[in-house]
Image (cartoon, rainbow, N blue to C red):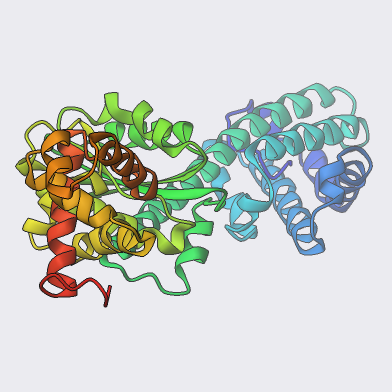
Length: 401
């Protein structure tokens, strides 16, 4: 609005007219009223604002017009600071009105003042008044941009601190009832599943690199949070097709292993995904041939040896117990097949069955738990799960599983 106007130098002749200043002072209410009427008549989004916000706009408009008159009257115009105009309104107003809307209001109020210049200025002084209004409004437009830039910078700094707090809460497993609300304040929509990626940085990330990484994450997934904890990078992704999203981020995360935790229902459960991914990152050096982007559950044996209790529970819950519950000779066949060096014929002889029977049972195992005993790496995971299960159930006693 005309609240968006700032100092500029004008000719002394224009400033010497006390008659114009008197007319301007007398017309302040007229200008403010005319501006607000046009806002209400011509700008739909202004009519949709809350009554409190509309009242703040009126005060700022009035403040801007009064400040313009003071500036116009003074012969040392450059001494006035237009940013003072915006102190009439609370900082929260920048959230209700965008910079684009603010500049739209500036143009409208300038038009109102120009339209009333004939009434406010004596003949011969109207052009000077119009020029002064245009110069002042230009400077105030720049002041408005500064106000919004400072507000955006303050919000950005606060968002960065809040984002770091949310990610740290997930890493520590401190997921209280406020986690969803804090994530929502950062724009987290909660659509789809959630996964956590953990990797390491090769040296500190500067502000530009961090900003680019955040933008890349938000392009890759519907929701994204980024936490930088020293040389450790924690990325929380939400939405659909999250594995594909993680793959698309790998060019920005190389070199080094990146571990992706298991998918969970929503961000409230993301602590489990984060803990698995962090444990996987610590254990990853024990698997030299691990892919650059590796799932935490693919590192279950290494995590177990490294002392991760979550890996033990996962091996029991997702491999050993489902096989025991499935019934039949699946556990026996798996144990014999692995003991015989993954030889179908040797396992068949030990079990007194045909090799095709062993082959069928191995396929059945793969269907039940999703791990294929005929693949060397997956056979290793199954063998570790079998050891953990046997220790848990007691020596050769699976009835309590």
